[in-house]
Image (cartoon, rainbow, N blue to C red):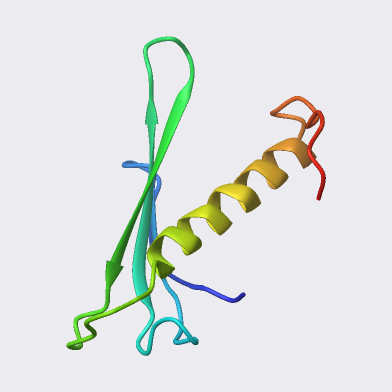
Length: 92
């Protein structure tokens, strides 16, 4: 799956990207992710899917699927960088 990053902001810890059309959405999505520092030294990441303004009425849950894919890839990369412990008991 290819996504086109349209914006990144180091000061607000935000990235934005667009997805293409597929079987579930005829126009794709405009997505953003923001990282927030928490007081306990952890980081919270929120993903915000939004249908592209085009009159698209249905997306069949595609925004949630894209968010899930984003979090899976983020977890994979953080484990590769050894910023998360190895996964235990996860079959992939």
